Each structure stands twice: as structure tokens, then as C-alpha cells.
Length: 88
Image (cartoon, rainbow, N blue to C red; front, side, top):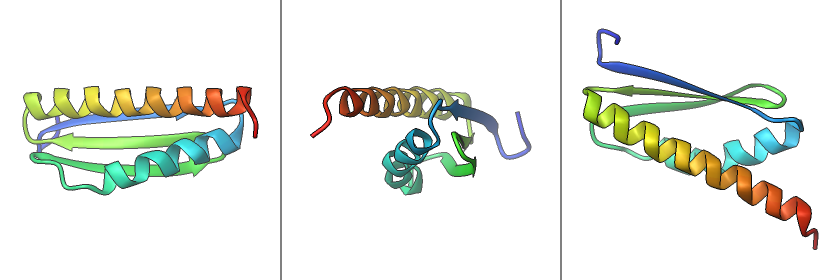
């Protein structure tokens, strides 16, 4: 826990650098949204890796944000897999 609430760090590592970029672009609009009692920062520090930092004012907001972002990450990863398996 931080002085400003609960802090969560999610690190996504991808085998291919472009996959991390695709997932980061998919999550960017959601990370930029105002969500009650939370603040989120999405970073793409190196090829093949992205980091999502969530700071929430209370445990309920932290849990909700964590579940939401993990779901979106899973959906983005599956979408990348489907796109690669079925090229145009």
C-alpha cells in the first residue's frame, strides 16, 4: 500500500515485440479513461514488454481495476493470437 492508496503493477511480456505494442495500443484508451477512485499509467519500457501501474484509493477500487485490466489484457492477447492464426 502507498501513501495514496493501493498500488498494483502488471507486467506483460510478449515473445514478439510487436505483440506488446499491439496490446499496449488496445489498452491505451482504457488506461486514459477516468475511473472512479483509481489512476492508471501504461508504459511500454522496452520491446516485448509493457507495464500497467494502477493506484487505487481503497481495496475495492484496486480489486475492480485489477480484475478489469487483467480481463482486457487476456482479451487483447487472445485477439492477437486469433489474428495471427487467421491472417487476411
